[in-house]
Structure formats: C-alpha cells, structure tokens
Amino acid sequence: MSIEKQGFPAEIPPLELQATNYEMGEGARLLHELEQTGAYVFHGSTTADIAELETRQPYDYTDDVKQEHGSPCVAATLSADVAIFRALVVDEYTGFGPDDKGNIRLRASQKALDAVRGQKGFVYVLPKDGFTQFGVHPKMEWRSSVNQKPTQIIEVTEKDLPKDIELIAAE
Image (cartoon, rainbow, N blue to C red; front, side, top):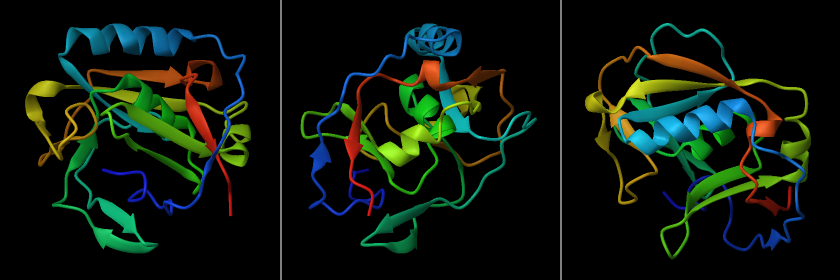
C-alpha cells in the first residue's frame, strides 16, 4: 500500500524530521521481542480490552475518495512499529507504507504527533497462523477472514513510538 493510498497527495513534501527525545518504552521493547519470533501479527487500536477483533470492511482513500479495499477482514501487520504507530497516531494527516527500497515509512503531521502526548494506545498480539499476507510488502499487511482473539494486549504510549517518523505538512 503506498503512502498516496493513505490519503497523502504525492506532491506534499515531507518536512525534515527533527530528532525526538523518545526512549523505547516497555511496550515497544516487548512488542519487538515478539516480532522477532515471527509467530505473531499485531493490530494497533485506540480501544482497550477488545476480547475478539471482528472482521470489518477495510477502506482505501485514493485521491481523497473512500473505496472498499478487499473483503471484510481483521487487518494486522508483522511490524510492531506500524502497530504502535496505528495505536497512537490517529489524526487524518498520517500515513504509512513501503518506500521504493521496500522499507516501511511512517509519516505524520506535527499536530498528529503532538496529540499523542499523554495518550495510550493498545496493540493486540494475534497468532500469525490465522492470517495471510495481503499486498506485495511482506511485513505491511496481513489479513484474516474470521474474527480473532488476541493472545496479549500491550499498552503503548508516546515513549513507544518509533524514532523515524517523517514529519509532513498538514493541510
């Protein structure tokens, strides 16, 4: 999934990212350990205590038009950083996707990052067994066509955000 498909016109130049003072928090440390096993996928949410993630219709926003993006599913990622980002950064001026070299890029406006202060997010840890890769990037998106029960729910805060988020202009 490209950055443009996350609602960003290609012509918005990313601002130079200034160094953040975030140290990796306990949530990120644990999630990265789980990620290294290769046995789990992750789903970031602002909602705590979801006993079972239900299938939902995913949408894509190409050229600011909301379009169905595949069949109803539980969407997840192999990337702990993407799940942490999605759990905490919820402003409309955000995006994520692979760059030309296949590296995952996370993008957000300063307003979106400022809104994270003092907030909590939740990353649902799910067994990878019930998911299949969706799209071409192997870490980006995995989907399940059936409801999924998490094995763990890990709380994350601003200390858990990845350090390499690109700043973008907010319209």
